[in-house]
Length: 335
Ligand code: NAD
Image 1 (cartoon, rainbow, N blue to C red):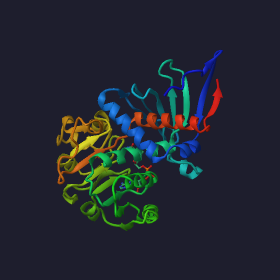
Image 2: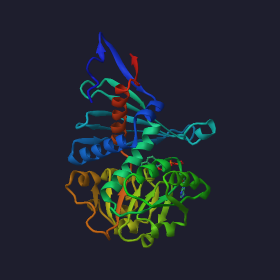
Image 3: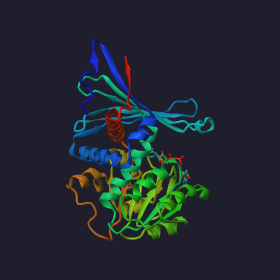
Image 4: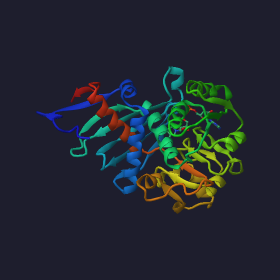
């Protein structure tokens, strides 16, 4: 992205501000898919790097705060997402997860843009699982199983439905009434929806998305049918867990970034139990780049561990800035 030219004149720096509202207006699922797929490919080629994640309890407002940052030399995105989780926000009418993305000019280090990160987090997370479905799920997948019905789940469902010709959606959530929002989306798309127990979900679904804050196995190895694709999207912190480590050991495992997967992602438990090693995990970018075949049989179980990397945030934020500029929706602030 070449935003740099002309932004500094006579010592005055122009910074673009892209609000949450503008992000919603300019970035669609197709743009997010393309941006995330490209950055996963760049990561696997060694053209883009994530820097170590910082995530700390700040000892105030029960908040968890941190940074995810990186540099994409291929797409020329440098920056960070700063934010975290404030559990008391709901009572104030705000989303518990709050984040802002900062983009810097890779040539000069000057601040380039401030981009609202809440909507983009949901969109880029949904894009990651849909990239995994596009590259790893069986082409004839017809039943989609949703585990979890929180904030992220509707974004996940909408993105997944675009990847295969699904005919039915089945769902499970800790609190069943919350499944209503997934049922509504299925209905709008002309698809049947059924609330089911977890074992039934795993035995019927061709593609399963887990997007919860669970700290235990919700899907057991023996429940999952051959040929399934599972996108584990909820586990992004040490201690969280969504599936049976034995399922991880049985599946062909792919991830956004191996270093994150084994430390804060879904594979952390299988690694800690000695069920798999780091070399058993493949970066999804290798499949995108064609250096790994991905799924090799109709019976194979494929599993994507989507841990959420800073480069995904930078990719969708850069795309938002570009689209907002094209559409005259970027605010300019001079510093
Ligand atoms: P949310 O708070 O809106 O919803 C939480 C969901 O988890 C609900 O469906 C809830 O029923 C379920 N849940 C909570 N505890 C559970 C338990 N013990 N057993 C089973 N289900 C349980 O959160 P959200 O914004 O939808 O995010 C869901 C998860 O995804 C969070 O853990 C979040 O940190 C994670 N996340 C991951 C990424 C990524 O890139 N991988 C990005 C954003 C969010």
